[in-house]
Image 1 (cartoon, rainbow, N blue to C red):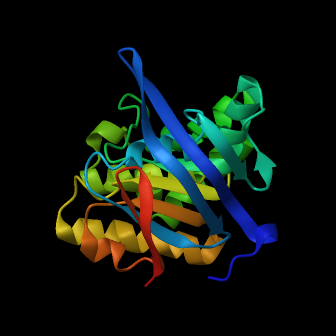
Image 2 (cartoon, rainbow, N blue to C red):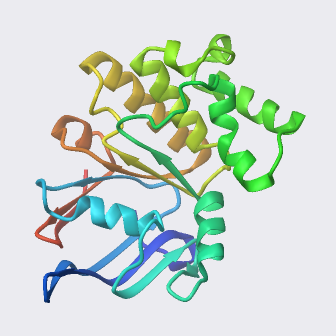
Length: 234
């Protein structure tokens, strides 16, 4: 996809991340430059220890870089207060994790409503309607009142996907979203992510160790030893 600064959902410029190790400083990410356009569907790959989780935490505004600039929807984040970072993360970024991170004592509908509750403070009919619509889009309309602990692994991941879309985010970060699923269910979940991407033009960055799934993305970004060594269209 041709790069258009005015259409960039994510832009990283010279991102570095270091941690203190004893009395020395260990740099994990070494000047990452990366842009994702609206509607892109990209895979982030690399061996264990390459810095994928660190990079994903920075992009998800869960941590701050040591140096460099990080823009979400054109807004530079390095100088934002923590309250503004929290608000930006909640409104612009959706997360899908390998282990679902659902609340088992809550229903599917209540889990999907959680980002809306965090943003607005108290439940209302509009939130319930939004959550119900999202569950219908992931083929779980008939399971909205089930406790998530009663759902299968694939159904729980569908709830997690619906939850990630509750705030209509510009960017969804999916960290090994099919890692705990069998091949057939993994294919279904991946197809669902792609369907959302096409329908909503939501940008996806998917961390995966599965080369078969990575090859089904539009773009593969490879990270090795804290540097991008390859960035290619599929």
